[in-house]
Each structure stands twice: as structure tokens, then as C-alpha cells.
Image 1: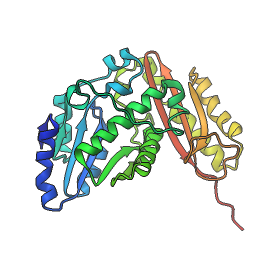
Image 2 (image 1 turned 90 degrees about the horizontal axis):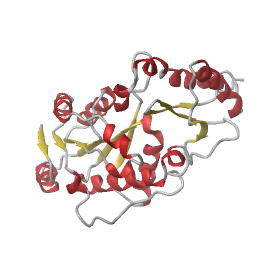
Image 3 (image 1 turned 45 degrees about the vertical axis):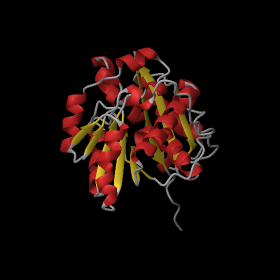
Image 4 (image 1 turned 120 degrees about the vertical axis):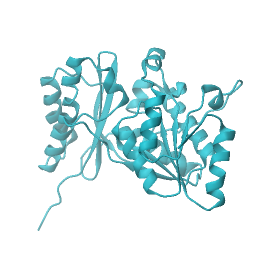
Length: 286
């Protein structure tokens, strides 16, 4: 694996693979790797060809400067994990490479960026995501890019971005990787206080309670979410949002009749966690 920091170095390193007609894959990350990231890198490596992992803590998607400052960073460890996972190139640019002096452009995906995370973090968050992903796609020009289901809204936004702007990139969304107690793996988990770490798995328990309710025949979203709310209340968690929404538009659903996204976000002290599951009513027989 090679480590590159500039766009010129990156394109030079990719040129050989392109000349041989090899496919190029990309795993965009902000570092602080965990098994969720590593699973995406392994999946990219399985594609064959050249696999690129980007490591860039994107300041444009942080609406809270203290959150940006707290975000965990350990490039040396990340580089070892990326190499072990089969990455060929680790692209770790400084901010000046991504946002040079005088940078004044942005990309916005309206609609799906507004609810859930958009309502809490502001329009700037997903504008920052869309802009940096567009830039990474232009820098790497991958044939396929891999993202995690844990960030379901982000994945939907990127799929819409690719569709709307006719980008020749296949977007693959891979399953959420979880700790043994169900907590979705996140770079922020290491920042949780011990007591909060004990409570945090209740997010997934609440989601699975909704999943069981829907599988058991509950179709009204309020009734289904109530099953999860009981779990959250027992754990002393007040979510920022806990919603049943369309997988296409993220609009609240009136009835759970097809595949539906159940999304949740909650704060544990200074740490904010998100999670989600996809639910589908049991098929009727006879």
C-alpha cells in the first residue's frame, strides 16, 4: 500500500491501473477506523483492480467546531488497518488540497438532506458531505464506491447525487457492523463515558423492538415506534429523533406497508450517535 497526500500523486498512482483497464474502487472515510470501515475496505479489495481508501476529516460537514476538534485521529493506526484490509492506496490529503485558498463552490442535494440529520445538524452538514464526495469522485474517478448502511441518509443522498449529476459511479451500501452488544460501530464510540457506553446499546434494542412489532403485524408507525420508545425510556434515553420514514424520500410514513427505514439519533453527554434498521411487514399467506 502507498500513502499519497496530493491530487497529483493520487492520479499518478491510479494511472497505471487505468492504463491496464483495471477497475478502481473507493472507500471514502474520515479515519479512526473500526471493523465497519475495514469491512468496506475488504469488500473493495474483493472487487479486484485497484482499491483506494480516502482519509479526510471533512471540516465542511461539522456544524459544531468542538465536535470537529474532538473527532478521533490516529493516521498511523489507520494506515496499518487499511493495508491489512487490502487497500492499495491511502489518500490522506491536508485540508489545503481539498479546499485550496479561494475555494468557493458547493454541492447541495435538496429534499433528502432536509429531515432527520439535516433538521438537527443544519443544511451545511449535507452540503459539506455532497461537496467533498463530489470532489473525491472527481479526484479518484472510481468505478464503484462503498458506504455503510449506518449512515443511511448519507448513502441515499450520495445515490441521489450520482443519479442527478450522471456520475459514472456504482454506489454500494454495505450492512452495518455491530459490537457484540448490538451497538453500531462508530468512530465516536471511543469517546463515550463508561456509563454511557453501557446505555448506548439500547438504541439498537429499541430498533429491534420496532422490527419485532412490525414483523408481528403492527402497521401504524406510532404503535411500532412506541415499542422502541419503551426500551429507550427504561435506559433513560431521550432521542433527538426516532422515526419511521420512506426509504426513497425520508418522508414520514402513514402506514408501514413496505420496506421502511427506522432511524434514531441520541446524545450521550457530548457524544452523538445514530443508527437505523430496515423493516418490512411479514408477507401474508393464503
